[in-house]
Length: 359
Ligand code: 5GP
Ligand code: MN
Image 1: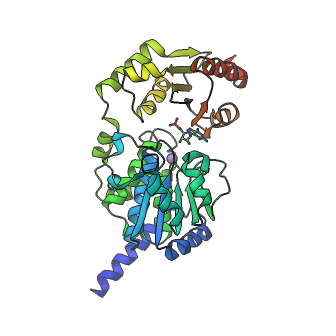
Image 2 (image 1 turned 30 degrees about the vertical axis):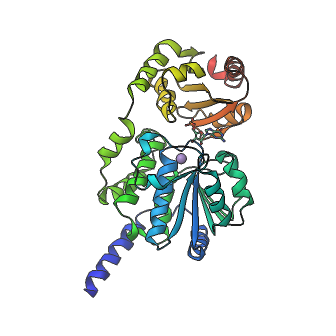
Image 3 (image 1 turned 45 degrees about the horizontal axis):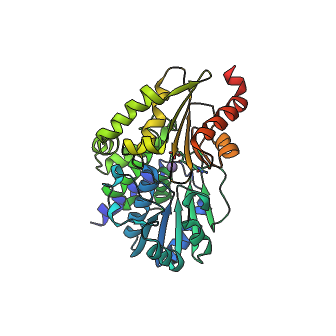
């Protein structure tokens, strides 16, 4: 028996050490100290939660549960897409804009707030104010550029594929590889898979495949995860895709695609949160298209998504002209002009900003 435990511990130790300690160990120990002390934890993630936001948050919740924490809430600013509703424990997530009072009470009274997949309180909408006012200790674990300084500990690693990858690393670096289970691994894998477009970008780090292998050893059903996330279009979403490509996509300059949808068009095709993700990526399948822009008329603003390939950063452009930001190849922003004026303004800035490439 003794020997068995020893062998298991040894194996775990060996596996843990296979992976580079990417997160600074001093940050991991400080974060662990805050986690140890906290009786209650609120895990928050960004507006329009995607697979990484949801996966990293639910994985972190289950990890903390495995550590013995009992009072843990995951709160998202607004609702998440149906194709992520199957994630383990997603049913217990609080949605701030629907459960504002309950969420505010938790945020105000919790001992610790863990912010995942965002690094700026602007990214969580109205919930940001509640977070800034809360006396709770705050930890950020994230992979976006330019973190705002609002937390006690900011673990910021923009080279990571996803926040979910960082959650995996955090668990391992905390010495808790042994606490991984199928459910945690499923959440982490979902986040990595969605933030890398099923391992087609931001995925050149060989260690990512070691991590994927470790997750698979936890008995996750990788193929079912893919199926549940990507093969879940509604008929209207598929028809909207056809409409966008056939009727709406414009090719600007040499290498840029633009799709802009009005409120009426969105309504006609029963547009749901999450439908935009599939759309903005599609034009990049055209041989010489390396930038893709998708605009949609929201309730009170125009929401814009930018995508690019290779060394063509779009996050700075999004920040400079559209009050946004994000990653090198996937960024977003917003505009308070009309859709028509936003398109015009975009064309003008884009021609100017990417002048060299368009010649
Ligand atoms: P999406 O186009 O899928 O909405 O967003 C892609 C990425 O861009 C997100 O992961 C996020 O990092 C970033 N992003 C999207 N919208 C905004 C925004 O309004 N502000 C900032 N700072 N980043 C955004
Ligand atoms: Mn992410």
